[in-house]
Image (tube, helix red, strand yellow):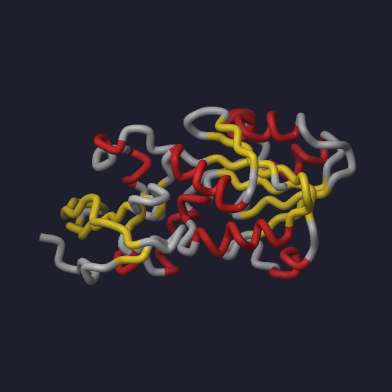
Amino acid sequence: MVRSASASDQQCLLCGETAEVFSAFIEKAYGVHVDRLYWQCPNCRYLFLDPNLRLSPEREKARYQEHNNDPTDPGYRAFLGQVWHPLAERLNRGTVGLDYGCGPGSPLRGMAAEQGLQLFEYDPFFAPDDTVLDRAYDFLVCTEALEHFYHPYQDLRQWSRILRADAWIGIMTALLENPAQFTEWSYRKDPTHVGFFQPATLHWIADHFGWQLEILSARAALFQTA
């Protein structure tokens, strides 16, 4: 039995409906046994780790700093190109965007400059300048960051507030296509990954905010604002 389970009622962190227990177990990680309790929303299909079981901010940042992200690495650039190239094809030279959750060492600003685009950066740990959230943007890119968000609805509302009409959003996050395999899914096992999106979740987001959605692959998608 998971010792630190929350109360029986847990509000979905995305749509606010009452979520249901999806999976609860204890597993060994980093040499110790840790509790795992995941909730799933029957409305938007968002699946998330119980908030009481998240890492401390210090341990979370330390985990990110373990990543070896070299912005000049061709393999890393190609990986991000899964969403960047389809996004950039839809943008005009001179447009201004935001890399939301850029992390340490993202190559996207350089990739944008190569195509005549200006890209600002925001990250609560590595680029915490909130003033970039006070202007309007033509596009936004969020690569391998959505799964880290503690308050996904608040972040999405922030996007809606700062994006102009007909703006483009490019996201990368591994979509959960087979919930039956969730427990053994490698993407789940990263301790900083606290929220997981199914294709139905992306459709809920599009419907809720009035955005158009194009799912490019099991890891990349585009939205366009109204």
